[in-house]
Length: 65
Figure 1 (tube, rainbow, N blue to C red):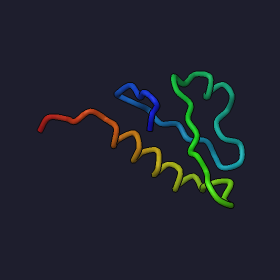
Figure 2 (figure 1 turned 180 degrees about the vertical axis):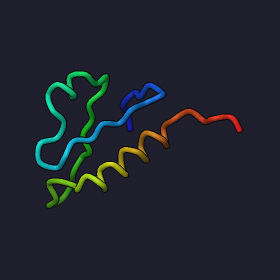
Figure 3 (figure 1 turned 90 degrees about the horizontal axis):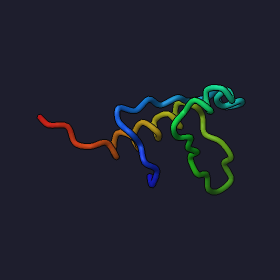
Protein backbone atom coordinates (compact mmCIF):
# COMPACT_ATOMS: atom_id res chain seq x y z
CA UNK A 1 0.00 0.00 0.00
CA UNK A 2 2.76 2.44 0.85
CA UNK A 3 5.06 1.44 -2.01
CA UNK A 4 5.48 3.72 -5.01
CA UNK A 5 4.27 1.99 -8.16
CA UNK A 6 5.12 3.46 -11.56
CA UNK A 7 2.50 3.08 -14.28
CA UNK A 8 2.16 1.29 -16.55
CA UNK A 9 3.04 -1.56 -14.21
CA UNK A 10 3.82 -5.23 -14.76
CA UNK A 11 3.16 -7.73 -11.98
CA UNK A 12 5.34 -10.85 -11.88
CA UNK A 13 4.25 -13.61 -9.52
CA UNK A 14 6.36 -16.60 -8.54
CA UNK A 15 5.04 -20.02 -7.63
CA UNK A 16 4.15 -21.01 -4.08
CA UNK A 17 7.34 -22.98 -3.41
CA UNK A 18 10.19 -21.10 -5.08
CA UNK A 19 8.87 -17.61 -5.82
CA UNK A 20 10.57 -15.70 -8.62
CA UNK A 21 14.02 -16.63 -9.84
CA UNK A 22 16.81 -14.43 -8.49
CA UNK A 23 17.35 -13.09 -12.01
CA UNK A 24 13.72 -11.99 -12.42
CA UNK A 25 13.56 -10.50 -8.92
CA UNK A 26 16.75 -8.51 -9.58
CA UNK A 27 15.28 -7.11 -12.82
CA UNK A 28 12.26 -5.65 -10.99
CA UNK A 29 12.03 -2.01 -9.90
CA UNK A 30 10.06 -3.02 -6.82
CA UNK A 31 9.73 -6.29 -4.89
CA UNK A 32 6.84 -6.69 -2.45
CA UNK A 33 5.53 -9.31 -0.05
CA UNK A 34 2.00 -9.72 1.25
CA UNK A 35 2.06 -9.51 5.06
CA UNK A 36 0.71 -12.60 6.80
CA UNK A 37 -1.03 -12.66 10.18
CA UNK A 38 -2.21 -15.54 12.27
CA UNK A 39 -1.38 -19.19 11.62
CA UNK A 40 -1.19 -19.07 7.83
CA UNK A 41 2.31 -18.87 6.39
CA UNK A 42 1.44 -18.73 2.69
CA UNK A 43 -1.30 -17.97 0.18
CA UNK A 44 -1.96 -19.88 -2.99
CA UNK A 45 -0.83 -18.14 -6.17
CA UNK A 46 -4.34 -17.28 -7.40
CA UNK A 47 -5.27 -15.58 -4.11
CA UNK A 48 -1.94 -13.73 -3.90
CA UNK A 49 -2.29 -12.56 -7.51
CA UNK A 50 -5.80 -11.28 -6.85
CA UNK A 51 -4.58 -9.29 -3.85
CA UNK A 52 -1.72 -7.76 -5.84
CA UNK A 53 -3.85 -6.89 -8.87
CA UNK A 54 -6.40 -5.21 -6.60
CA UNK A 55 -3.72 -3.26 -4.71
CA UNK A 56 -1.99 -2.05 -7.88
CA UNK A 57 -5.18 -1.11 -9.75
CA UNK A 58 -6.73 0.54 -6.67
CA UNK A 59 -3.68 2.80 -6.35
CA UNK A 60 -3.54 3.63 -10.09
CA UNK A 61 -4.28 7.17 -11.23
CA UNK A 62 -7.82 7.69 -12.50
CA UNK A 63 -8.25 7.32 -16.25
CA UNK A 64 -10.37 9.87 -18.13
CA UNK A 65 -13.65 8.66 -19.53
